[in-house]
Image 1 (tube, rainbow, N blue to C red):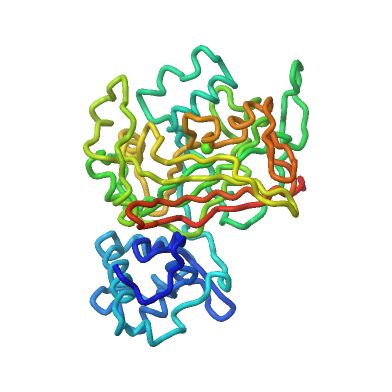
Image 2 (cartoon, protein in one colour; image 1 turned 90 degrees about the vertical axis):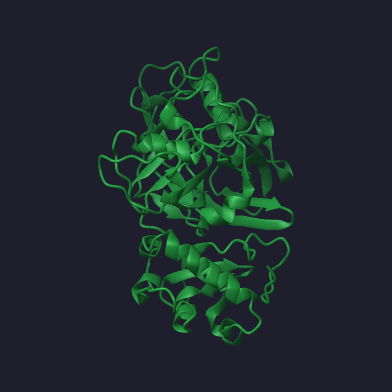
Length: 411
Ligand code: CA
């Protein structure tokens, strides 16, 4: 595809991407936009120029605080809208080319939480991460629990504290059990951590009692975002038995503003890891369902340079999204447009590919060296954590931009 719009070579937002988000500017109320190069295309303004004439869309779907109504149009329409935008951006005679007002520089717009998130589920699908955490929190000899290779373990999370990239977070307080003590104390967490994850957004609802097969699961996934599932390890360690994560997780999770569609990610599909023992029939799948998405995490202390502390990849996941969705619905639990399913921390095999400080500093025992001579075991006040993700193949780049947030002192 050849476009008339200028796109820097290293841009995540190539003509092959066309991710959707919600933006506003001084003069424009929140609305649907797409990222292209360093610009945002105002999809509502493009609609007013008549480029979507052949598709029935109500004005309020595009001039909206959230993408839910847009996603609910269904893939048939949303993929068509994406294709029309691509065609217009490649057509030298496009009406968009004569109307500069449909484009705004990305640095002049405000991005918003793109989705009203109904329900949020967090999986635990990286074998390397589950093994590392099991070794530290439980038993080094039997790190993976007996169920782990038979089902994608997950828990129901909290949506109210999912926030858009750029919003700072205050260090949480809670109950912590000091080492070698029997009674907990109440204090500010000193083990605040990130979790490098990706989330997928449900694009089609089901009714209660029904389930989704691995074969059909992709029809129900609209797209993906970067996801930092903030965690307080000291709070988590004391509270998590026997029902799992609670306040050590629910204080905040940050998501990236642009939702990259599953269609844009299609060329980057790769084979997943061999699953042994064999999974039950409802979890079997055909074809490639993992994705080669390069991921990185950096820490930037206040007024210092950022240091990349982890290089990971979404392709390492043991359980893939279609298995997660098949498992999630196998009991008849319904899902709704705008639900968010997160992968769980994405760690690779090497020590530089771990997706959390818990693993990178091995429970705080091995401090990481940052540029400017600083050291970190966990996240300190005023540190900014930034996660990036992109796919690249045959010079075609499709990326997610970033999810970034700063930790502020406790309130
Ligand atoms: Ca998590």
